[in-house]
Amino acid sequence: MKKDSFFDSRLSLWRKAVQCAYAIFCIFTGWQFYLFYKWAVGAGHYVPRPPAVEAFLPISALMSLKRLVLTGKWDHVHPAGLAFFIAVLITAVLFRRGFCGWVCPVGLLSDVIEKGGRLARLSLRLPLWLRYPLLCIKYGLLGFFVWIILFQMDVASIESFLQGPYNLTVDARMLLFFLSPSGMVLGVIVGLMVVSFFVRHFWCTYCCPYGALLGLLSVLSPFHVNRDDRQCKHCRRCEDVCPAGIRVWEKQNVFVPECIGCMECVAACPEDRCLKLAALGRERHYPLWLIPAGVVGLLLAAWLLSVWTGHWHSAIPDQVFKVMYERFLSH
Image (cartoon, rainbow, N blue to C red; front, side, top):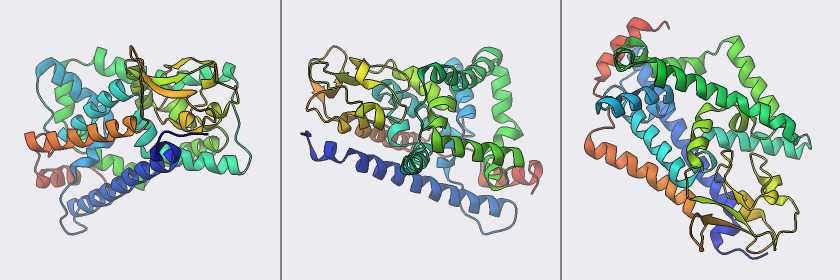
């Protein structure tokens, strides 16, 4: 089996390296925010609030995006969250769900759990008649949020929420959600992990509304996996390594929203030039590193542009966050 480059032949290792790097960054950001929270509630020394924590507030960011489109106002409470959200949406339009396949730490955790299931020989392949109904979970959740925010909330309602105490403390509420989960929440998390041990990437494929949104946008992407039927031996290795279990060996071009742009299928194909990264309207094929380079490059560019234009750090002073935490959170 030939591979075009050093990157292609070690694609899985490169993907894990990028995912681990971002996961480490998320852990560092979470720890920094935890120290900030401890200071805010009077239990530690001052540590600046990290703006990157706002990347975990997609619902607030969706509201901010609607207000931005309708009024031109950038969110000054969680500006980094809006910048990150827009950047991720753009990556989906340009590079499919490359964020899910190359960056998202939940995807990394799903990979680890799936690997455990495979090693224990307990991994199951769901039949098509069951896969499609399960997909309704994430699209139903996405539809709920879209209906409420985009169709039920007017600008005044959104601005009231964004300026309200809940949104000002939502980052700390998220922290407390993970530090002190209720029995029901803990049961759901454990249940999802157990199911993911048997059904690969169960959360990412069937439950994540964020991934559903990116998947719908990804159908606009010019890039896709192309299969040469003349060279395909129908060995199904592409389906075996695909996190979403897509039947790549049956398709000439993979446009489905569940494709996360990981390119594992292309790297695993034993037939030279059978699977390739292609673009609509183009005869040529593209190097696999284009997807992760494009996604990571866009995220970094969004961060630099936001910092340069003053749209990264919150306009709310840390002292105000401290007062809000003390007033509206129980601890």
